[in-house]
Length: 370
Ligand code: ATP
Ligand code: MG
Ligand code: MG
Image (cartoon, rainbow, N blue to C red; front, side, top):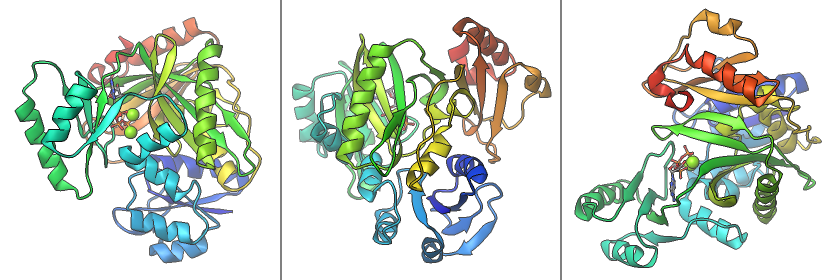
């Protein structure tokens, strides 16, 4: 089986690693260079998208911000999973919001705005504080503005106007600020025959807008059931095939969807060590038409993102139940360079393990652990 991944970053790399034991060959289309590369070595394997499409049995994606002409070309081959509709919804907050509404899944109140008059209307109908999000291209909290009572509306609108001018077909989703207790996410998978399997919810902590710590939750059957119901509604409404991640706000035990990611997700990396079958393998199984693997939790697990660092002390490898995954990327400030999965036999042991691992990391990147 040959799987072409649109995007050649760490998610394609980890799919490649997970596919090897199943004889699934993963290769990657680098959307920025137009090269078809090996996901581990980045060496050019094939010339051009069309050659890659012909060579592939299945085409999938590792990110949602893919030019629509490329998605449509892939969809026309009949090999793209999940569908172009699902991937487009993940990459455009307008489509995403209507998807959530149509599937009857709770999400923050919002209004789509494109003009100053629209913004005034959103302020009066949705109310302040508002979170303003560019509909296209946002990730890691980029392309967002907060508007609180008393803020300088003109200055913020100036910035937004620049963003609207930069990209054609751009708009802003003006969303009610949700006073959440915590953020959780559900990673699940739907097979071609409609079978669904979900992992335990993960609790997520962000540092400067970037995910820094994800911990698998072990004792929240009610929350898990809520999340699973919403997963089912969304995945079935899209006739989805593959791994789908849903980010939620937990407000007093009630979940509101923040956003979806039509792909394997950073908050599911812990499954590499903490679950019977990892998210990367399950995604490949789903899109290849194979039976899904068990998503059962094996042990208490958390994941720490390595942000902006490309080396760590060797002694870290001697920490018990500590698993380092580097992505082989060039170092840049704040960039996701790798992650560490930490396993333990109890929540208390996990907390201790995280505390001792934090000693090896740049405190600026990991205030979540302090
Ligand atoms: P990602 O890297 O997860 O794709 P993103 O750039 O797409 O992030 P969001 O997940 O929409 O952005 O928002 C980033 C963070 O901002 C959220 O994790 C949450 O902490 C906060 N946030 C977003 N929307 C709201 C809201 N309506 N109310 C309160 N906080 C919010
Ligand atoms: Mg996002
Ligand atoms: Mg998010």
